[in-house]
Every structure is written in C-alpha cells, then in structure tokens.
Length: 312
Image (cartoon, rainbow, N blue to C red):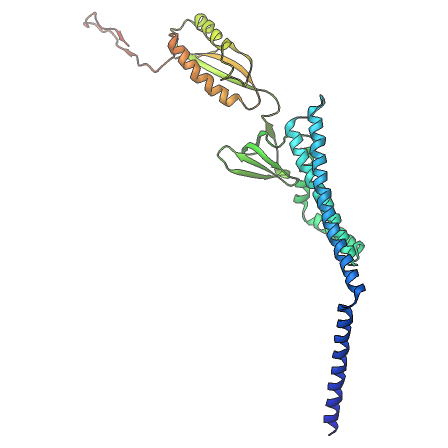
C-alpha cells in the first residue's frame, strides 16, 4: 500500500511539473513582449546580412569606378595589372565584410567573440608552424602582385608551363596552356618567369636563298614588299619591317634575315603571315629558293672517252 501511494504522489508531481511547463509555454506564446523581442532579434540578424551584402556590392562598384578613372588618366598602370588588382581587392573586401558580419551575428547570440578570436589566434600560430609551404605560397603570391611580375591575361612561361594567365591567387597561379590544359602552380614554386606581354615582340625571320640568286636585287625587291604591307592584314606590325642583311652562308643556301616589331605576343601570327606572303612574292618575282640537289662526279681514267665528266 505504501508503494502504491508513493507512486501516486510521483505521478501527481510529474503531472504538476508538466502542467507548469505547459502553462509557461502558453504564457510565452501569448506574450507580446516575447514576440516583439524575437522579431527585433530576427530583424537585427537580417539587417546585418543585408547591410553586409550592400557594403560588398557598393565596395566592388567603387573599386571598379576608381580603376576606371585611373585608366583614363595619363599616369595609368597597365590594363592587365588593373584587372589583377580589381579582382584581388574585391575578394579582400568580401572576406573582411563577411567575416565582420559573422562576428556581429555571433554577438547577437551572446557568444563570447573575444574568446573565439583569441583561440583562433593560437590555432593560427600552431597551423603556421606546421604549414610553412602554405605561408611561403601566400608570401610569394603577395610579392608577385606587389611587384607586378605578371597579371591576368599575360602570356608567360613559368617553370614547364607556357600560356595565358587565367587567375592569380595568394596561394596558386592558374595558366591556360596552348592545348587547352589548365596548369596550376603554387606561388612558392614559381622560379624564373618570362613575360611576353610587357613589351613589344620581335619577329626574326631567316629567308633562305639559293647561291644563284642576285642578293642585292632580291634584297631591294623584299624591302619594297615589306614597305607596302597591307595594314588591314598586318595591323599588329609596328613601323616597317627591316631587312638586316645576310645572316649566314651555308653549304646549300644563303640566309637573309628580316626583323619586324609587333605588338606583344603578336609575333607568332605575324611571322606565319609573313612567311606565306613572302613565298608568294618570291615565286612571282623569280627569286629562287634552295632545294635539295644531287651531284654525280665521274673521274676520267686512261682510255675513257672524252665525253665523260660531271653530271648534275
């Protein structure tokens, strides 16, 4: 009987606790101050997110307008560096604003942000000692951008990769190779860099002539041809290509060197067009190019007829 009465008392107590909990929930649900506070809390969170997005968009617009004004000024930097700096600044702005927004949201939830920042600093120091290669990549990426070694859109040769720079990050650099492959190299592993997009390029074309060719006459004809290049076809050529003269004399040919200055990285296409047009011009004007020949020499011996000799 005693155990039965104790069980009834426990059930009664549990029912009373449950009833109190239900009553508190009802009071909370129907409490105007609770909903008003919750609404203000949600509005503050939404405002933080919205303001962060607006600041990022406005900052990106201001960065682009600032560089657009610089592009029109006489003291402007190169266009490729402008693109690189715009992208870098936009990413930096995005990281800073969103990180600040996250801290503000955590503060609204009454989370100790100072403790998190202190813990993150200690963790970052520990990770820094264990990730020296990562730190090296980031530092190298900073100096690549700061020193303007190359920029987005440049045609470069880095280590074993040669192609157009697609993206420069603080850790890696991505290059689109000629065959369409994407070459990614850590910035800390970048050694020598050859940048073909900084200054004007040169086309050095060696034109092979036969020994029977009148060199002076051929040189005059080629000079006249180079001085009348159609601008619509050779818009990348700067000035008039120059005939430098005989580059070398080889056993079966004479090499006549031609030099042409072009816009950056345009030397490849200009060189192909010049070779094609020069071949057609030489055929029309009778300038002979060397070709393989076989010479047969017969030695005379006593008793041989006199009609023997050298055959070509």
